[in-house]
Amino acid sequence: MKKFYTIPIFIPEDACPHRCSYCNQYHITNKTLSPTPQEVVATVEQYLKTIPFQNEDIRVKIAFFGGSFTGLPWQKQEQYLQAVQPYIESQQVDSIQLSTRPDYIDETILRNLKQYHVSLIELGTPSMDPEVLWLAQRGHTVEDIRRSAQLITTHQFELGVQMMIGLPGDTAEKSFFTSLELIKLGGTHARIYPTLVIKGTLLERLYLAGKYTPLSLEEAVAWCVPIYKEFESHQVTILRIGLHPSEGLIHQTELVAGPFHVSFKELVLTEIWKERLLAEAKKQQGDTFQITVPREEINYAVGYQSSNRKWLEKRYKKVNFLISESD
Ligand code: SF4
Image 1 (cartoon, helix red, strand yellow):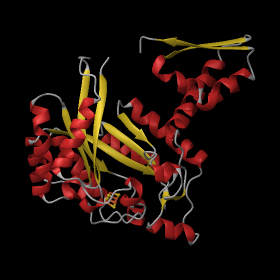
Image 2 (cartoon, rainbow, N blue to C red):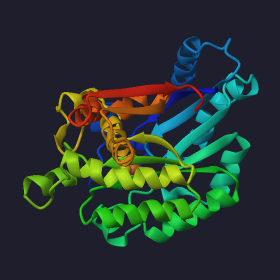
Image 3 (cartoon, helix red, strand yellow):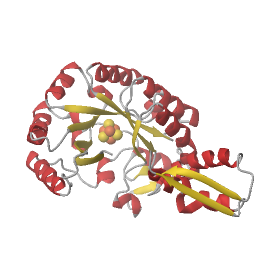
Image 4 (cartoon, rainbow, N blue to C red):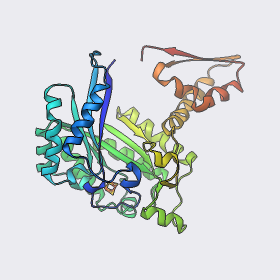
């Protein structure tokens, strides 16, 4: 089985002159300055030391996260990309990916990225609903998302989509519609972010003024379930659900409100497994419930804090989760 390693390089908001209503990159990443190319090399070296290369099935990628990579002046983009080329040439790193905004994509940018072996471009695509985008003050349109996604797939990059749920004006139906549209546009990878109210954002002011109510944790999980299933059924790789739990989010020094949970993905997958277990339970009438689950899914099947197991144990005297190695 292949093992994947990601070397993350954070390029915070100096790459992005926008200020979407929910975003304050400083508060999320707790960094203000972009790294120098030398610092990028140092980070890559540091990560490479931790990767067990004796395993032949290892895949390593360098990922430029944070701001909008292609919003940087080309000279700076090129410095970063040049800095990591030796690792591609020596085959220590297999691919490069980056994240950016839909309105920072054009033919020239894509041609330039191609020559530096970028393989996956993740687009900020918070919603495919025009009103939600406008209220989020994204500064681009749904049409920009369509145009850039089409350019990316036409130039044979993999397309990553980063959608949000629970922005002002959003509904469960609109967010599900967004996932359907992003699949149609050819998304191969996805991130799903429940909207959080972060300090120093317009959303914080709206929240404090009583003009925005974030989703509850239960609502956020319930909205994510059909979206996750839809992506999964179209073989879209789900890279993340929920923001990375930074110190500021965990200790709530940067988080004002919203459905943050360190195990958000586990909560969503617990619900998805609960549906499967419910269907299975309809077939199992005796005192014992038994199900075979792939090893990598076992924690989700048993449920967050064993919630699914406890729920089954109310109905069955004996509950057995068996592990299958084949998947
Ligand atoms: S475009 Fe991205 S980085 Fe820039 S403000 Fe919006 S969410 Fe933040």
